Image: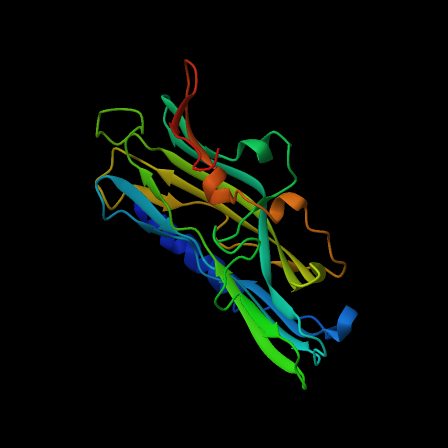
Length: 283
């Protein structure tokens, strides 16, 4: 049987994997009652069962978009007799990050979180950078202002994915010649459903989730634009885990800086000292 062209294999691999997977259903958990009478009726978490998409439309950068992680919870807050405010929402932290872009024999660029990498902290906040410690403040949180006379029932949801740009050329070079040969990314997150009394700072962890996003893209920079990159395993992501026992939130996950402000882009050549390409926003 004649061999298929190099750039035909990705679509065949992806179709085969997704057909084998079928439709992945969200994971649910049974209703649980916590302190203060707060009830979590249902928690769902999933990663879309689609492959990472690759965009080669730019002659300057390769772009890719990963499937979305999604989480939602249905919560019931009992009547609040006092004049106090509760916020129920999602808090997320990154506990592991490897993000390398290889440029053949010349070296690699690497997005790094120094404090996390050096073991100084257990995890780093993945807040939106404004509403610490919350992941966001639209669908991601719900605020209940007391006193209230009846139950408050609501759904809070969040989603997350990666959509970065990676330069075809070596990022510290003045040359525009494509040298990118591989992209590798592996990140792990812990996501907590939390209820907080803003008057007393009492924090109740209602649910803990673990999820991971892995990515490997092989690039042949000598091929024409639009035919250079192909997705390697894993084509499909592992589904999130809803833990039966909650985990505590590390203090570093509740405060500045968040991951976006703390990350630094390094150039690590095969020979010679590493260089800082983009310093962290937060110092």
